[in-house]
Length: 156
Length: 156
DNA sequence: TATTGTTATACTCTATAACTATA
DNA sequence: TATAGTTATAGAGTATAACAATA
Image 1 (cartoon, helix red, strand yellow):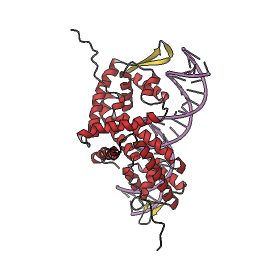
Image 2 (image 1 turned 180 degrees about the horizontal axis):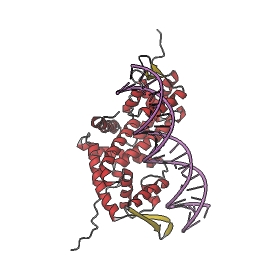
Image 3 (image 1 turned 180 degrees about the vertical axis):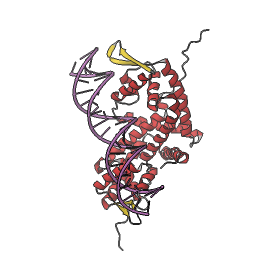
Image 4 (image 1 turned 90 degrees about the vertical axis):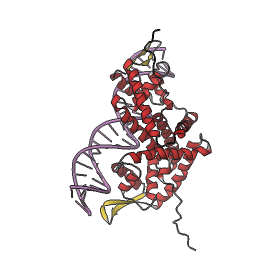
């Protein structure tokens, strides 16, 4: 009996791989939320920053970056843009003048409120293919796998 | 009774939003698979291309791009890289000389086999925070929300 | 010395437009 | 005309290194 070299190991379809699935799930969510946010003139990343600024006391740029797991150099440009749109103000922390305290303006708060409603709607559209009971389960599963990161590394 | 303007609408924490969760879940999967693939000298995107080339009959560059929902201009550089590593060959389709048929070399096949095992391992690490029964559920949920995309648009 | 914000720079991934060769 | 591949280019998003101001 001749055994040829054609015993190829089975390769799962690319559509079964988590790398592929997460990439495309994220792209879909990003497209839905970009569309939902267009009327408000802010990007999804900017809404994330506004959200962080609205949670707890106004953080420094570095703290805001850390809460989003972004680099502090990335946060500079993000705050620049939000400041240009008059949605946030920044100024030195009196108790440590190296730090910039970033605060929402009234316009920032109302934009965030509207953007949050639009994002809720985009999330509903994103989750529509799932059964109702699965939607919160899906969120918790994502939170679990993301939390795996914090556990395993010394992320900034 | 005085009602001030401080009745701020509740803003959900950024860590509850699907935009944030999908971004970081993808980053974690990408980091795990980049680490797992390092010994084989290929990126996750390159493994995805090799996987597509190994599935069904050797596709043209355009077909390979479509199966991954990538632009054909993106596929050019990807194939360039794989060809430089001698993992694929490309040449005109005799029956339509506008098209390039892309095929795996023997080295491409064995690299794919090794990379597939490494990726399986990375996926196991990624899914470790979930209970066993939830891991396949999670995959199916991702497939469902990703499929929402194909249903709703005329993607290339 | 160390930390925060900043700038400059570069790299990855992606998309658009225009060109070529084929059909 | 239209299609497949290619090239050049530009835009996000991110990261690194170096600098100024402050601690």
